[in-house]
Image (cartoon, rainbow, N blue to C red):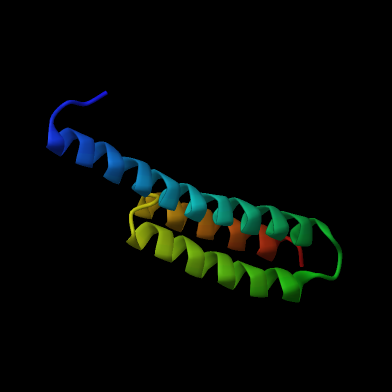
Length: 88
């Protein structure tokens, strides 16, 4: 356990930030899984595109608040749209 007051505060801040980032990442995981299900189903392209836009917004926001790295967000967005375009 930290002894100095500043170290105690840093630990407290770190725990709070970790919870916040985990909440964001969990939401991204849920959206990604839902999107993968829609991509694999036939005739659900429009719903997949709509959910892809929501995922894109969530990824951009996660990158903005530095929960994930910006390049990872853009890579995931690119991969999702490639998969959707492949399932015409």
